[in-house]
Length: 305
Image (cartoon, rainbow, N blue to C red; front, side):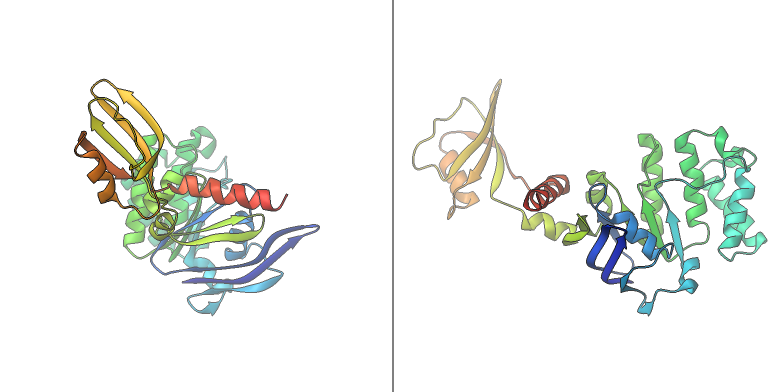
């Protein structure tokens, strides 16, 4: 749906994006990741046509990005933009009209979302009268009311308690199920693993990693497992097909983090352990996106020092 090709963006002496290319498939939830200053916000502003690239091109469903695409995009910025002294109901209607809806249709959809999110009593309240999390709910309604094809959500869970974060997460997934493509920018890696189909990781103005979340995690597997068994600690000998990285003893059982030796397999671990212990669990440790994020960003920063 979105094809980002060789984008360069320069601000005075700072290059915010340096030859960045990303493909975002229609109907997916795509994670745009990176530390502060990586270039994420600059790229989001370009997709929203707030700023233009110095070179490169963005395609929307195969067409060069242009003003006609604005009404097909919903953007929830990290820095919220609702008018603090305007009543929420009228503000939602006003923003919906800017996206091309008639007042009648805007009213119909606003009432639907206010009921769905159980915020009917807020219609005549002003933004400044609400908590940060409640303001976020109102901003979310403003973002989705025109049923955009592309949703761009920049730190959408900021200010939410766990209950309301779950509510908004489910609404995002429901909109995606109905066909919306979602670009999701966040520092919460647990949300990335839960929500995103694919990701791109930016750092120091460059793309340093992209692909499907499951494939990326699998590519970082290194033969590390957690073994839990009952009984006393088993002494190691030279025939063990693994090295112990960490071990913890508890009453009645032992837990070991191990790395399988090159050329050995899981069955070799079982063959070594079964005559000596009753095994409760042998589970592979697949790196989390948070661990991969830290590894990739850390190594890139070290290389550029």
